[in-house]
Image (cartoon, rainbow, N blue to C red; front, side, top):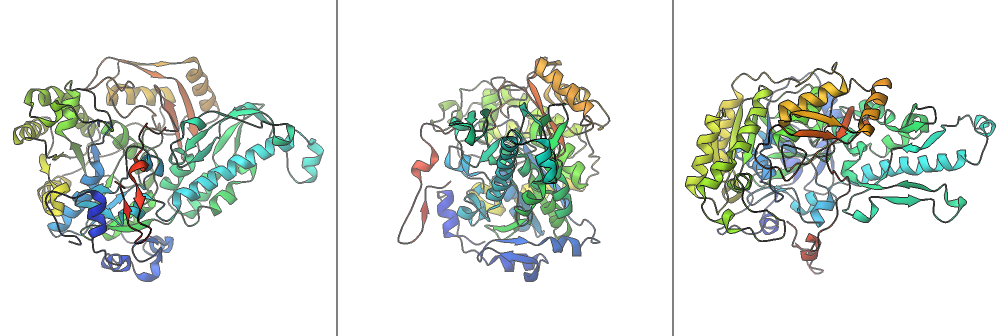
Length: 587
């Protein structure tokens, strides 16, 4: 282990900064990735060149493929990334060559209230500060590519308003004739900034372009980020970039990035971002950290390319899908696995006593405020009342035909009796096993039992496949997910949603997968409905198409594509020592 364990467990950043990190080339070579196959970003992080995958194309999938999902979380999160890293360490502790594969975090939540996403305690990916801040610049590249398209589109609308058809023909171009009321493409920035959700551009006179309402999304909600995570190679990336639909023209036909002539330039800006980043765990397992699409808006999974590489060189690849099984796991299977051709051998469902108490009717959990005593003192009855949520998520995993292991992520405030209630209920509900994971405090040793349980589960037959055929209509796919995954009685469509469905099917997008945009804090569309709600009406307010990424996303409930900062953001506790460069307060 590259760090000495202490009790009580120090802060995440203190642990990470105390670690003795090996040069990344040594970690990579231990997994068969030679120095010539990587581009170095300092001593401790690197990118794997795409030639590595091309040169090893004939090599069969070697690794068992494990997805880590969870029950419906509290706003504090239940340690899914910590469990993902811990399981990779635990597999290492029992002598297996394991690889972790996770998303890169947005700096918006990092400086907001959620904090970083490198794991926690003695199950982290390091260097932790680099992981959470810029890393190798991929999110900046995504932002640049996205905003290049935004500026190109506004410039085209401006010039088409000034010049005739004949002028454009002389330039070897044609007018796009964008409908100003059907411009779908916005701008992005990788910060939480609620003031930018709705803006007006073109203010100040005709020279600044026509007045138009638009807005900003957070960078990781960009379709460009979703594409980066799904592209299998540079050719696939280029083709997907050209299929992005920016809106409709005045005849109701889609206008794409290829039509605008910007797709090639956008791809150029991503030529390095497509190469997966590699770092390491605190116990020196290889960690792929690549792409970071939002999970309640986009598909919420790390990159296909990273997994295609990792499954050729490890015994186990442990990845994670965003939020609970209703959100991340469903999209993992129906979008990511359908794209990659890799199907999971087992799933780990992360549960906590704290979250189950919330689902049992416990007091509201609010980030930045102290937990109520119900969460810090033993209350077995409250845990029992919340078990319906765990049971519902296990039913979802079973629907996909994947063997499931429940990881009970241990908190210091849990009692053994509460953990045993969860363990017994999980096995009764069909889990192959349920294990208390103590890796936050103990590192890989604390996840060794979990690793053995996962190894046993992954040896069972997995019948995993898509939840629905693509030939179904958009409505049929939405309704199958809403009823069978979420527990809805039926789906109600707004007039706008009905119109979008008709338009998208006429334009040929009806055969795309569904990527539902809904709250992560309930199995339903309503974050106030805890536990396992049944018989509710699932509303679809609107639909959008991400033709480059390859999915249609219905929007249910109040979903913001640009978060806001809390009254006391995390950045207020962060600083840097100007003498040593040591960062403090990053979590």
